[in-house]
Length: 331
Image (cartoon, rainbow, N blue to C red; front, side):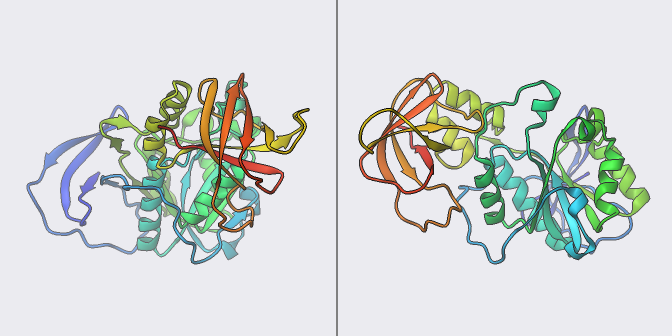
């Protein structure tokens, strides 16, 4: 693997050992590595750069297409460069990965594509899913804002769990032109996680698509992972969770009957388990969900009472709509 600086110059040559990239030859400098058009042979690269300073939503220049499963792909989608993942938090690590997806898709003359799932794989693998960090509808909004051209929402069930990685790849390549995959060293997909960077690259050499391997990054020496964010939220460290997310912790719920007279107290019901801070009272901001078409009205200040996995809002003014987004700015 070639490790590149952010300016494109060669930094080191590395090998993959025990799922980690280990530098074998570190260079003091080196000429810029020119970008190449894709060829029939796979291109395997490792790129390391600092994480984005923030994960602000970026304006969309064209709408993202949402495809309901790999079977719905057609040649009209064009040439696709794909990353596969749950993207259950769309945190700063995901923001970095999507930035690399756009960069390498542009280099290959392809469209940046995310293949994700309608349920967390752990729900099928272990019988229960972790609490969500981002509402599924908001996830699509944020993927579109991140410059993704196509998001495929694949149904995850036992049949998909048992699908070998090469058949999973064929579900894409038989329907449209596949430029390649973006992966991290520890990424894997397919039955028994058989689709590792090494095995997918070997398949790519045989079938003519590329594999680009990018290094994940740490934030201040800490892994940016959804599990770490959930741990922070559960411990009440909302500032730590926000630092990894790149935005305040938020949940989206539906208005529920409270049995309390008046419209200034609202209880939220959740379709899926959500990551909530410990029981207590919190100053929050309330607004309609992202992408609800209700404009850019400023959020309303409120008090949230979290108790036993339930959220009750004491609103200072009305917020329209059957669903509400509650963000916990933290201290």
